[in-house]
Every structure is written in structure tokens, then in C-alpha cells.
Image (cartoon, rainbow, N blue to C red; front, side):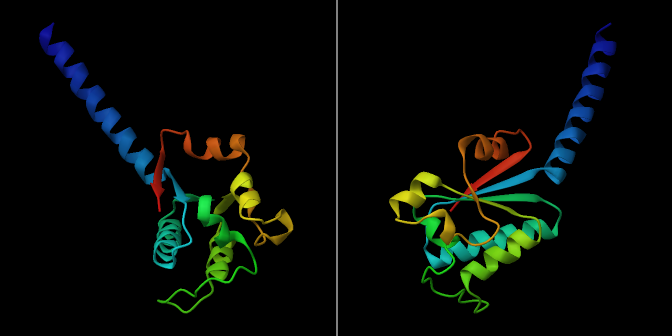
Length: 143
């Protein structure tokens, strides 16, 4: 009886390990961007783009000072590595299937309105944003 229980536990352990590995491979990435610091923004966006290349579904949430990234005409430094405008990198990310939400409250505090957003960015209503990271297959990174 003891051998049967140990065998069942071993099989179950192997099965669960393979399920977790698959979840990691097919999982989602949620990047919480709270800053407009160029270095951190470039790291977050490049991490998002590289994650897309390996098949991850990636969501970017712009909040606190990160809302500046989502504004079409915000005067931000260019990416020092590629020379591209930050907003153009965001557009590329969206064009490749990335989701971008912006904190409505933070946007208002910063003095922005919805008509100023980079095309494709959605207002981060709590029900939408929560759905993106309250999943056991989602990894969350904050910059």
C-alpha cells in the first residue's frame, strides 16, 4: 500500500511539474511601469518586445509618472540605444499584439485627457487591468 501511495505521489508530482513548466512557457507577462525615467522605460519596453518574440502575451500598465509614456506629444528623451521616440516603441509593441493600459486617475492628476493618448492605449479601468494580472500564469514586473 505504501508503494502504491508513493508511486501515485511521484506520478502526480511529475504531472504537476510539467503543467507548471507549460504555464511558464505559455504564461502572460504584466509590466507595471510607474516611471518616466528613460533608462527604466527603455528596459521595460525592450523586455516587453523581447518577451513577445518568444511568444509571451504581454500587457503594459502605465501609471504614476509612467503615464507620460502614453501621451502622443509628451516631450521625452529618445531611446539612447536605438534613437527611436519612446512613443514609437510603444506603437510597435501594440502593433505586435501588446496591450497597453493607462491609469485614468494618474492621467488626470498629470493633466492629460484621453484624446492625447498614443493610438491603441486603453484606459485602465480596474476590471480590465485586474483581469490581466490576477491569473496564476501571469508574471508581474515593475519598473
